[in-house]
Length: 172
Ligand code: SF4
Image (tube, rainbow, N blue to C red; front, side, top):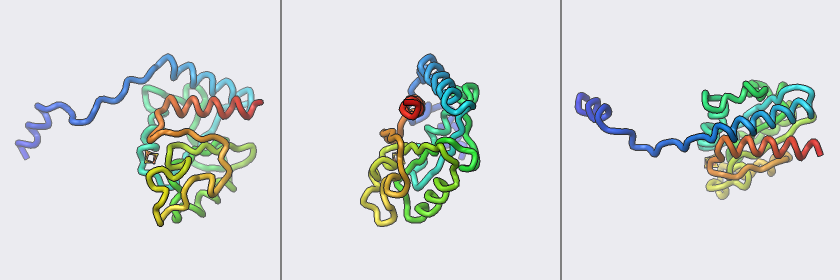
């Protein structure tokens, strides 16, 4: 135990350092999403995250949007606990058979106008789990998808770019 403790204090972390966020770009993107959301919806944007069967790395990147670096709430973008309060569903993972019904009900419970974003390669086309017996595959196999954000996992910056593209597209 002492040896492990000593090693952990004297050796650096074994993982690669996280990429430094581009603060200016993130602030610009988040502010733009907030502005377009207010123009389009007359209020801030509410997001419900749905894990339909992911490995959770996509969730880590989505959660990063709320951390001290990105702090999306300052731009009026909120994660909500209920689909009944959401404008956007961010759906991750290949849809597992266990989550199929839950995803469908979540989509039905979300009031219109609503948008669905498939986040990550698994949500877009099943990704590395596409042939699994336990999955029904892409999110679009279960509910209509308005935007696809590829990546394994996509970065917070890509998520913001996706949100902005979606709102711009819906405004047109
Ligand atoms: S896209 Fe990659 S990171 Fe996201 S759930 Fe699939 S395997 Fe995990």
